[in-house]
Image (cartoon, each protein chain N blue to C red):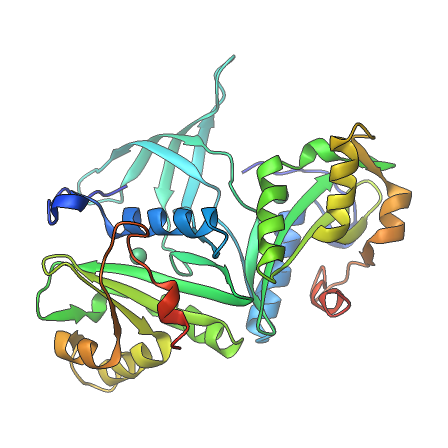
Length: 180
Length: 180
Ligand SMILES: [Mg+2]
Ligand SMILES: [Mg+2]
């Protein structure tokens, strides 16, 4: 729903991270490499009108907090589950961007031998990182025990895998999963 | 959104199959047996109001056709994907209840070594069946090649696994997956 209109790249004007990942997933699906979809935005529907001879119209609905992550699916026999986050920050990723129930969800996924991770876009820097949940959790726990409320870019450079954006696919994250 | 209000069981008055499966999945999640969620209903949001001091209200939106299935998640290291369908029919399951893109999606899941299946409730009979996608596909192909447009209950009894509904969990489908 919310679209950021910032032109941060000649070839990729105004695209949100969600746009980029949807394109990437379509590419993977088309080539038979993986079946990974964005989950619909959860809404609480209150009022629906049924005009005669036309489609039902939702007239009152509210956004609900997502109880899980943005994307899931299957690749190479593995369950894949990830959250995508963008930040305009240039030096760190603020952990307030992540909901506690998303951490809880990813932790359960890992317990059941799924692959859980986060894709972060530093929009102003045009840099993309993939952080396994197991690494993310360390910084989350650091915050919970009184430490800093963000992950420094330099820490991310150390523990995450950087993906250089391309044309097709835009954010080629599947090769990274092989390194997990 | 649509709720069937038929009382078909003393202990389970008016519950839709979706209600029953959501309860079952909550039970599994709570006991750490599996992480399986219903996907939100996909809606196309056209107009949103932002009243001051209160939550955003969606004022115009439309239901979109789901491109995948109702439920997915992870169990025992496997990717799980299924569609839930109810019918009031007492002798057969009409295949028009299934969308072609759902068949296509399940077929892709199976290619990537996920487990794909359908849970059918014969509401009037209070009977529940789990049909693996590989078995369902045979009947789908029969229809495409000019055969009948439904699966006879007796055929379902032969090729599906029946689940007897219980209290906790309501529809205990995980043990069935071990037989796949
Ligand atoms: Mg996100
Ligand atoms: Mg359904």
